[in-house]
Amino acid sequence: MRKHLDAFARLMGDYGLSEIYSKGVEQARAFFFIAIMPDVALPSVYQVEDRSIPGPGGEIPIRIFRPNAQKDLAVLMWFHGGGWVLGNVDGCELNCRKLANEAGCVVVAVDYRLAPETTFPGAIDDCSTATAWVASSAVELGIDPRRIAVGGDSAGGNLAACVAYRAREQGPRLAFQLLVYPVIDADFDRPSYLDNGQGYVLTRNAMRWYWDCYVPDLSQRRNPSVSPIHATDLSGLAAALVITAEYDPLRDEGEAYGAALHSAGVPAETRRYNGMIHGFFNMITDQPVDEIQAALRDAAASLKKAFNI
Image (cartoon, rainbow, N blue to C red):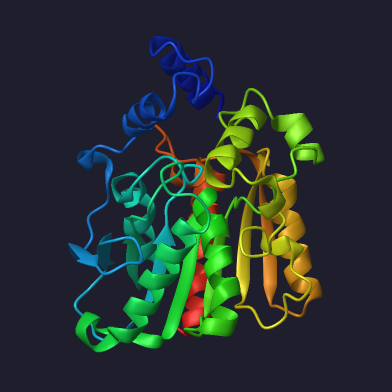
């Protein structure tokens, strides 16, 4: 992790950035793009297909990862991270390929609209629309509509939680939610924000900026549709695995959400990976890192259990 932190700090310096947002949205996106995994670093997968589907704000690009030629496979909808402002399906290739192979399920990555051009609830609308489309297109896609999970990392974890919250009332019925160090609440004063808000890649100031871009209306930030931890009733939601990292500003809110789900009777498990920082789940390292490998195994095992594989 220290090697990664040092390399990140050097790269920020090379680009003249004091914070990811210090030169504006476009420069932040350009910087984020350089971290995309080169093709040679990506594991092979049986099939990758790019498509576009109708959405509330125009066509939504999706990328479908298939682990094998079998029919009626379970499916994981994957929503990428990037603070609702950065990223695309190219940036989540590693996660999608690994999860497809390890869990033996189809993975569908969604290129939802980004803020600040599209504010809340645009990204959630796109992700919910894509999830409903996959469920209704099960025969064409060769997937089992009874075995659909949602997942994502960071802001994508927020979107997965929000899609699951919406799906309880609107459908489709979901089998699972995989929340990888999710954004759950716009509370920047939790202990993990104060302890880890500087020096561990994701900063407290950056999270304020992301929220300002995505939900500029402060009165909306406690809306359960964007911060489901504020819902009065979480019962009936899909089972969940919440993954957190020890040195992550988002650690405490993720763990609080896992506890809230459990208290509401949802089969929810929270696992903290010690020594890890935000972004570790999709990190490429020179040598294998036990906690990174364990997180992938745990995520895949939880998906298999939910899918009865």
